[in-house]
Amino acid sequence: MIYLDNSATTKPWKSVLETYTQVSEKYFANPSSLHPLGAEAERLLMQARKQTAELLKVAPEEVIFTSGATEGNNIAIQGAVNANKGRGRHIITTAIEHPSVLRTMNHLEERGFEVTYLFPDKEGRVKASQVAEKVRKDTILVSVMHVNNETGSIQPIKEIGKVLTNHSKVLFHVDNVQGIGKVPLNIKNAGIDLLTISGHKFHGVKGSGVLFAKRNINLVPLYFGGTQERALRAGTESTAGAAALAKALRMTLDREPENRNMKNRLEKLASELSKYNEIIINSPVLRAPHILNFSVIGRKPESIVSALAEKNIYVSTTSACSSKDSEESIVLKAMGLPEERTTSSLRISLSLDTTDKEISDFLKSWKEIYYEVLKVGG
Ligand code: PMP
Image (tube, rainbow, N blue to C red; front, side):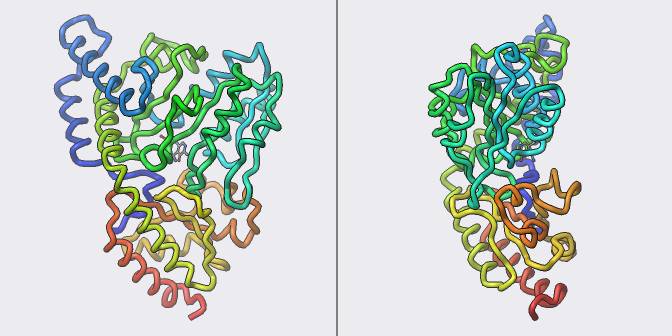
C-alpha cells in the first residue's frame, strides 16, 4: 500500500496507540472523581496538558483538549463572537478556509453577523494588507488558516497578527491543523488569541485535538455541562486521547528536521508530474512540505483516484471533507483558476513516514495509469 492522503488523516503511530491503550486501561477513572483513582487520572491529564503546553510554547491553562479541530474551530469562532457581539458583529475570514470554519461563518451570517471573505491571489495567499483594509470599528474576530488543506499555501499569520496589534480588541483565530509540525509558527509572537490543531493529522488518534485559548479570553461555551476544560468543553475528558496527543505532538516536533526530506520528495513529485502535458501544478511555490495539488486537464479526478486505488495507491480529489459534496474545488476557484483546473484537481499529501521508494513506485504506477488506463495523450 502507498498511502498519500495524509492531509485527510495520518496513520496513528504504534507507540501512540500503545500510550492510548495503556492510559485507557490504567487511568480509566473520571478525572473529576475525588477518590485516588480519579486523582491519578487527573494527574495524568495535567501531565498531558503541561507537555502539550510546553511543545506549543504556551501556558498549561491555555490548552483546552477537544475532540478535534471541527469542534475547536466552532468553540473558538462561535464562542468569541457570542462573547463580543455587544461590541460589534463584523468578522473577517478567507474564502479558502476549511468547511468547519466556512460553514460556521455561514451559520453566523444567518444569525445576523456580517462576514467579509478575503480572496487569495493566484498563489493561494491572502495579504495582511487585505486585513488592514477591511478591519473596522465593529470587527470582533479575524479567522485565517495557517496552511491550506488543499494546496498547502501558507498564509502570512505573523504579518496579520502585526496588523491586529493596532486593533487590540479584535480577536485572532488561526486554524493550524495543516501547519503544525510542518511550518513553524510561534503562537505568542504572532499575536494569536485562539488556535486549533487536530491529533489525527499528526499520527495521533481520531477524536483528539487542542484549542489554544489565551488565558484572559472570554468565550461563551457552545454547550453546557460540567466545568471541564475551562467549561468550554464540558464532558468527561479523554485522558487517553490527551496523553496520546501529547505524545504524537512531541514525536512530530522532534522529527521536524525531516521535513526537508519530505519537501524534497514533494519537489520530485512536482517536477516529474509537470512533465506530462496535461498536468498543471496548482500548489504555489511557497507551500507546506507535505501537500501537492495539481490538475489533469480534461480528466475526471475520480477516475484517476479509482485507477490508483486498484494499484493500492491512495490519493484524494481536492480535500476529503469536500470531495464528496462538490465537483469543483472552492479553494482553486477562489484563487481565480479556470474551470478546467478547478474541476480536475488531485491532492497528494505526504507524511514523515513517506519513503523515496514509495515516491518512485507511485511515479511508475502513475505512468502506467496515465497511458494505459486513462489513455491520455498516449
Ligand atoms: N481544518 C483543516 C485545515 C483541516 O484540514 C481539517 C481536517 N480535514 C479540519 C480543520 C477538521 O479537523 P477534524 O477532522 O479534527 O475535525
